[in-house]
Amino acid sequence: MEYDAGSVSSTGQISSLTTKIKSIEFHAREDNEGAVIVGKSNASLTNGREIPPGEAYSPNFDKGSVPFSTFYAVFEQSGDYLDWTIITD
Image (cartoon, rainbow, N blue to C red; front, side, top):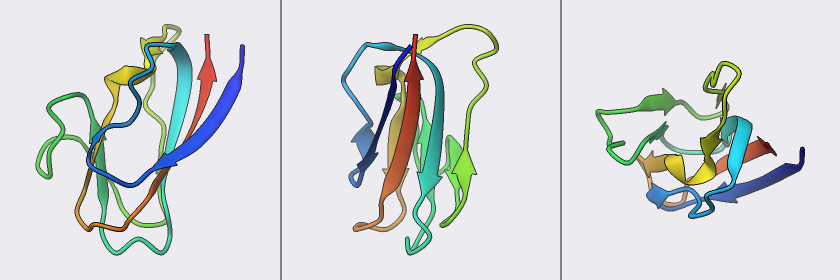
């Protein structure tokens, strides 16, 4: 099991890595000007989990794992950031 962290600031796939992850936490930076929406490849401003500035979200995988490449982000405002932390399988 390994730990990694990073950030993304543009709409699209968060990572192209197919590494299986056991957990992920997304955190929208407090100084963001808009929400960030996270989801699968069909994420959009109207489809996905909205994370307001300064808040975090951790999807529940039960006891399974998913490829890191599963996740996409959509930004309401350009220049905003989404930080992430993962634990790999």
